[in-house]
Amino acid sequence: MTICPSIAVDAVQLCVQYIHQSRDPSLYQTLLQTYEQVASYPDASLPNVMDLAQLDTKWADETMTKNQADRVKLEVELKTYSNNMIKESIRVSLSGLYEIMMFMLNRWHIAIWVISIAAQAITVRH
Image (cartoon, rainbow, N blue to C red):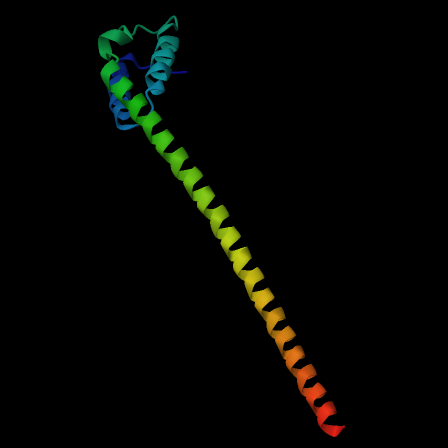
């Protein structure tokens, strides 16, 4: 691996900017671990990472709180949508059952009507 200490400061600062644009405070930890790994190489003479970028704990706390709130909100929305889909599925099923029952009831009324006409025809002949 080739190490270029002359751009380490800029690279860390760019990473910190990227981290602040993201919603993942754990990237700070990844940045620190990676930087310390590279700094431990024998031919690397890099400045201390804490001199380059301070962890913005306020941003990290706010971001984690916002992420948790958004997660809870999305879980509630998902549960609501799921319940609504179940209700809609039940409504569609009941609507289909109603249509079948009305069809059968209509056929039953027609059958009774035909039987009553036949009975009237038989009584008129006698």
